[in-house]
Image 1 (cartoon, helix red, strand yellow):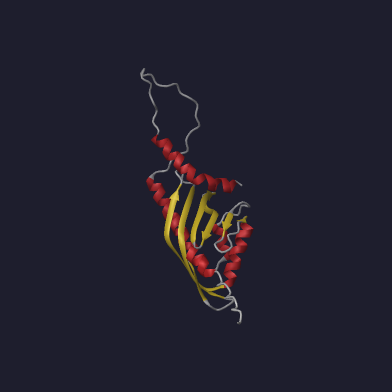
Image 2: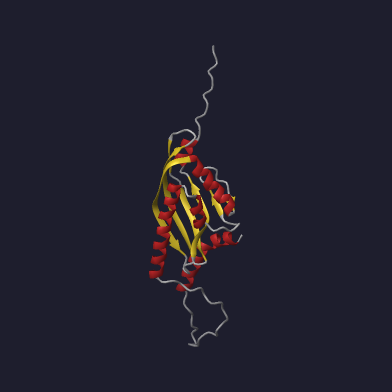
Length: 201
């Protein structure tokens, strides 16, 4: 549940922090300063240089993630994801909600076992870092060419992906992932409807 709350809070946190920065203290017409009220301290906001450095780190991490797919390295998947019981992955084909690292790892292993000659590439990478620098939303689309072991046929998949990462012990860990196919891909993946037999006259 903790990880889900982080996911739900990422975008609102960004909006709220920027809104707070824009709000100015209103001084009454009397010229007197309003009485101080007890408020909780706002979270520290990182500067642009720190944001740029974080984006570089996350970009490098995503390029490494592509190599993990190419090598089908299940052990390295454990370095990418948080091992908490409430991480969530929603795969593109089934759209099932997989909860917990064990379920996530099982999904990766199943895919790695079914593929050969994997060429996994990431395109149009976009990264949005929260103002405190502790979480990030990452979007991109994948171009994955591989050979299906079961059929020996070449396959291409191009899902759109959105992930959420957060800092754990100073390390970036993925806590949420959602991948989806385009409408065209989903339509193409569906088997053609069987032709109805024409009754003989």
